[in-house]
Amino acid sequence: MLETLFRKRFFVVHLALSAVLAFLLARTATALASRVLIAKVLATTDESARPPGDVRGLQRTGVLRDFVAAANANIFEGRREVVIDEPGSGKETPVDTGEWWNAPKSSLRLRLVGTTVFSEMRYSLASIVDEAQGGSPAGLYAINDCVGVDTSRLSPDEAKLVDKPPPCNKVGDAAIVRRIEPEKVYILNVADSRLEYLALNEPPGQGDAPPLSRADKPEEKPAGDGKDIGDGITKTGEHSYGVPRSAVDGALNNLSELATQARIVPAFEGGKPVGFKLFSIKPGSLYSKIGLQNGDVINRINGFEMSSPEKGLEVYQKLKDSSNITVDVKRRGKPMTLDYSIQ
Image (cartoon, rainbow, N blue to C red):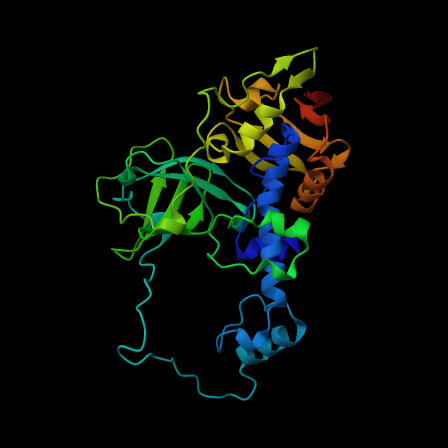
């Protein structure tokens, strides 16, 4: 189910770590989990409401899969014709021109500030700032289509996970995210109908990006006391930390900023997922304040394996109100445990 939901919209492990770490590596889970739940809604939607010919979300059903295979094989040797819309029959859809590896630097005033990359790109996230909006907060984006969600079919606990639309591919009216890599994001420039790229730590283009619609504008950060994320965290032992609840709440309210503080990617051993690896951790960031180091692999949180998004959701549900968190990591090949007391 989670895999299906990611396909529709997306996000987790962008962070799963708290009620520090658990909430960060678990909110990541919340994001990815929200996609899963959205897919669940879409999969159970009344098919009569689906536009003619729209089979998205049904590709995994046995009957349709067999039908598609038969159609592709053309077993009756029918003559295939390309369907061409009549002029004026609908709004023209921008088409990618060229290949992504030949894409030029984007002329749009968009700045890439961070990425979270997974082996399956539909899970990946990009944090992008629209400089045309006068320094507005970064927004989180994915390659998945933006789809409305009816939460009436979800349980109250599930509905809480999708109270906000998860990241999708529309960057206002300016661009559509097509591909996310560790150092670059490839977008479709809607105005020019061409593929372009945004590079990490490079200045934005000089063109005028169409303004973000109200629905697509990132949330303004809540007014605070000016403290950095993670202020108040104290080291109480060699591998133990005291974490104020306010630090946890501040982290969850600033996910876009957290996305710029470290990179998180899946970790594998023997071809099997074993957790999430962190690197490019910024000095003074929340990650460094809770004792994480570059190269650390998060294996377990309170004994729960972090080997999949499903596990991230499980961690979030069971630890969201916990006051004590243990995180098992592998550092330079050796296992160790970090302890957190949420105060």
